[in-house]
Image (cartoon, rainbow, N blue to C red; front, side, top):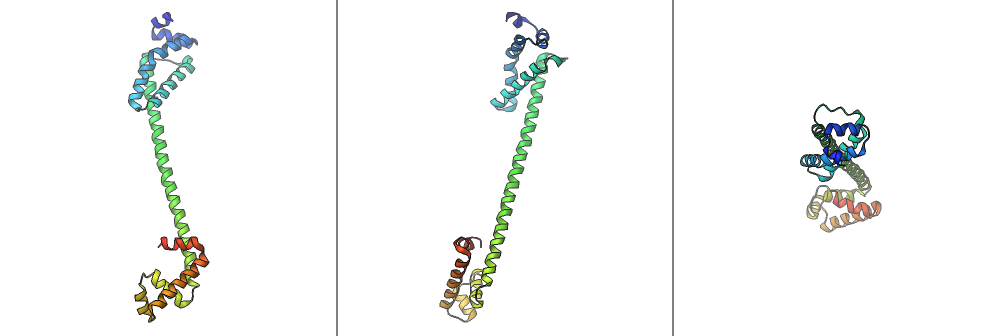
Length: 191
């Protein structure tokens, strides 16, 4: 291994191009730490920095025959690392935008679905209210839609407060029976 330690980068590159694994190991020993520190400073993430540097060395080995370096090997490797980092940041930025877009879409779809169900439920409740006897329906709507008190309804319709109470109670019984317990509960929470 001493002959590899003493070899210049250009000599090692020639050996690497001929498939010399020891030359590759020497490149790795010489430049891994420098490239890792460079990547870690930029990415602020040890795992991503290590992955970037590993990719550089994999490409160095697999593309050794076609590498034409016009500067020093260290400049070449730093440039490769910088480009990998920029690609990673760009890809992560795109993925983050996609995640945000997806979350907004899911939220919108969820709200839309909720609105559709609420409208369907409201239509079903309105249909059942229309089927109530006329006086019961009127008292119930004054109580629930117009938010009048039993006293105000009694005064308005010229009936007793107890009659108003009975009409609302009977209307709720009918609706509870027709719509089921689930819709009865939802009726009071969707106002």
